[in-house]
Length: 204
Image (tube, rainbow, N blue to C red; front, side, top):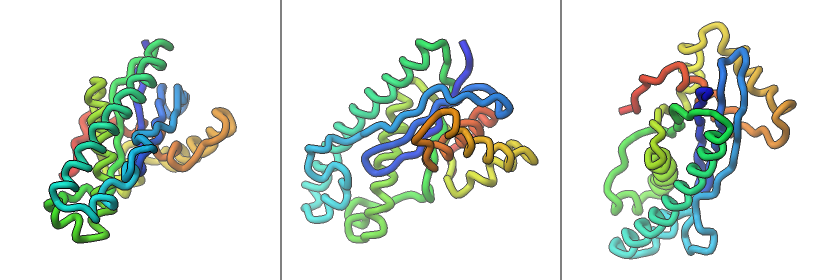
């Protein structure tokens, strides 16, 4: 079995997962997928906190719980499917790198719903937590770090080779085919950093 790592970048209702293997000099993109983690027919699923803004606090709590249950089920299914695929090709996924936004703690639901800025922040955290929990459910350890620290992490991990590695990742679209988006490039870099820094801890 070859060792491999997932890198994940999450958006509202969907996420990009890239599975990498090998070292930077011989990097292999084992798999890459865009997974959908909402039921598009469910009202308010894509922006659960925006939808909850117009509800009573009790209704908002029920809506968020229902959205979380559905999204969790979809995320676990999608990640398990991808994991089964790479495992069948003789790759062992050791860890997942999850990119965060600010990483700041959120206040109570009542305070979140009173602030449009906090609603956006909470939705980002909602879907990142969904995917992170799904990885844990599939027994994949999760390393979390802030996306704004990605460049700093890359330089600390790969030193002088960091710039060349970024260029190499950017050029992979020629071999792996389209689409090779910024989401995928970022996720691939995060996975490589996690492969070298298994002891990274979540930001406080």
